[in-house]
Length: 530
Image 1 (cartoon, rainbow, N blue to C red):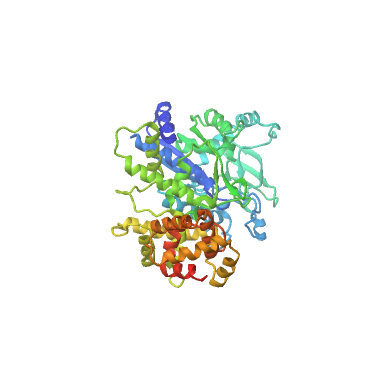
Image 2: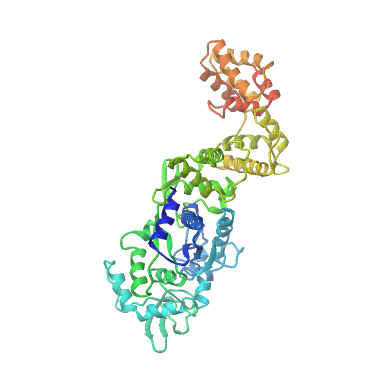
């Protein structure tokens, strides 16, 4: 059984409610990366599993747009130092394209969620506070100040000061959340404060966005507002004494609410060279979700998350995207070959379920598929710079020479193929290897440095090419046969070919590559050396 189904099943057994609310969220303080997306996609998988079990469920996303800007991040201009301490929703857009700082980073992420096939109800914390949705929760927190302090101090090495209050007031003068509460009058429901930045003193009543609960109180308050039943969370929040542990006690003892079931997930680490570094917006170690469809279809990102249990960390290597896509393609083939069978074992059933949870829109029939790495080669060779697009006529010619049946490609497969061609080209140019075929003069110079037996093979192979069938399989066989004919190790034949084509000892699958390059070019290149 897939991990999402296991979690959903246990939740239904443990909690008997009219509706299961799955919550997720993010603080849009910087570029929202695929490490952040793991939480959202984990929540979505659980939500889909609950729906599959015929219970009423809802998936909600709460953007913490009212959190303050904590520091000057590396991607921000120096002048944004003046906004440190202000709520993200009240800070100008760093590029002047959105209504606020928060929206600049949140909007592309929410658009990405739509592409990922996630049906979600989105809330923005700044609007929730300004609409007064938190006012009653703030009042309860203030009236239970000592109880909240007692709970938090259980997990602190240094106790909170005696004059601490569970509220952060937005200064009416400078707009920052760096204020100190001086006094709370419960009968008037008034909070007196002094700004630690500009020194202004003021009073807040009613709250309606003029005050915000600190995170460790905000989270349990939010659970009780939205009746949250289950929520994925990073291991930092779930650590002993972390915000979930304090949230559980505050939810029960202050808000009289049974806390949601936690689902802890591990980080996605970005491979940089030989190192795997946890993604961090503040440190600039990111691959933004909005950039994913520049290199691959959304279902590939879903698959990256769905194939591993949340508690398993993921090393994400941009150079290995073709391998990840190949895995998905094999899973898709397995799905269509086995989905209607009744005798599948547990492992096979889990594969079927991983595909279902990875693929928001499952096609009726198995799509026509060309491997991603091969698409990166084809697209580079057929890209028309003037039209900023691939030449599909040339693409089909190449596919035919590579033994693909392209006669009856359906519209869905055609669009997916074209998208993959462009995505794979983008990947190759930025993260893979740009395909550069050396010119004839360089090829001649390299030829002179080859071993005598390799030179002999090139001339022999060139002669045989004149009458050969020019498709990938025939060319592949011809390479081996001609090498055998003259007593050359096939490995040396491959290396010699790559050297006179690419100027290096390795390259794409040679038979397919030669078929892709076309008869005229290949004959001319191998015949240069008479």
